[in-house]
Amino acid sequence: MKVLLGVSGGIAAFKAPEIVRSLRRKGHAVRCSMTRSAGAFVTPLTLEVLSQYPVYREEYLQPDNNGDELHISAARWADVFCVAPATCNTLARLALGLADDFLATTALAFTGDLLVAPAMTSEMWEKEAVQAHVTTLLARGVTLIGPVVGPLATGETAMGRMADPDEIVTAIEATAKGGDLEGRTVLITAGPTHEPLDPVRFLSNRSSGKMGFSLAVEAASRGARTLLVSGPVSLPTPRGVERFDVTTAAEMADVVDRLAQEAEVVIMAAAVADFTPRSTSETKLKKGAGPPRMSLVATPDILTRLQEIAPNTLRVGFAAETGNLESEARRKLVDKRAHLIVANDVSRSDIGFGSENNEVTVFRAGKPPLTIPLQAKRLVAARLLDLIRQELDGGEPGMDTAGG
Ligand code: CTP
Picture 1 (cartoon, helix red, strand yellow):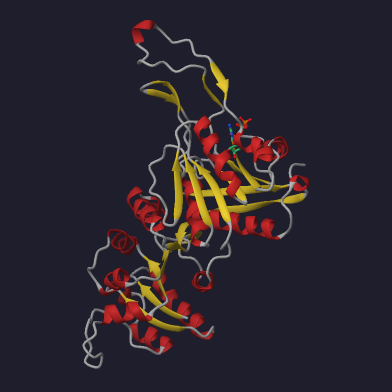
Picture 2: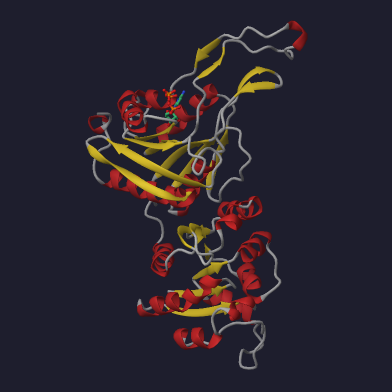
């Protein structure tokens, strides 16, 4: 495989030589591009010696290159372009499509698989502006490797450390292998539902949709036909994903019932409202009329009904809990006839609704629970899909394995 490694200027750049060495040991051809500031952390000579190829800096033409511009020939040469470390400045430039240096210009000219391994302090990583760029890149099909929780240059242990070189190399190789969910159809729900009280008000919850969308990004990047049923959220549609927007629990139930017939896996990451107003006022409820009397009725439990509607699907539920995580998750595994329940503690401020990160425990019938430790939702999604693929490969996801 031909790998173009883009190195931007952060302290983690000192690990770039290790990535080059490991790729070369595995038989891959490597060329490196460095931003101006990367040179402060690692020398071009180190990367040149290890890759055995001159490092691309800011020269766009070389005498022996037949007049071809180097950012074009580098982009055409590479099968995979991995930016590691990706600083928040470089993430922003990639998301905005700027062409203000060789690395960014080459990324624009490149049409293959782009991977980014961010590295920064946790404050920078969690900044809304940075997350907006990450969301944009993910929606375009860019593969995110890390960051992870670990010791940072500031001395603290927190989210923002670049993924280990080994993990980066594994991700690069996995990209080239193609998707392990090729040929599968995965149906995912995401976000909240809105249950209207009148034309301007509704009952809802705090779900942001990020976990479900991360699962969709990951499933699509692994080659699955990915059907995403989304409640009202403000997230862009991930590349390669078929999106179906709904508003209410009843609408979500209708669309899921229909699409589940085509799916092998249904992942109910949506926070579906359990109750909806018995009736919706056609006109705005006026304050002067006093507190309205509100009568609620239960919504259909979409996951539970799937046992009958799509009995051959592997069914995965989520359980967002504020206490009794294990007993509640186990109850839902049985009551909802699910094969997997993914539980998290939403009372924790670091992984609650809207957070960029998550830590979940997966409950499976007849097997010990499995905890996926605190990390970016996209990485949690990757681990969950690993598990789901194992379940799919491991046998018949019929009713005999559900519950219990
Ligand atoms: N779910 C569903 N249909 C509903 C409500 C929930 O399919 N009407 C799904 C969710 O998408 C999730 C799982 O069921 O995958 C668990 O949702 P949760 O809200 O935690 O469970 P509830 O049944 O509402 O239980 P409780 O209120 O007791 O926590």
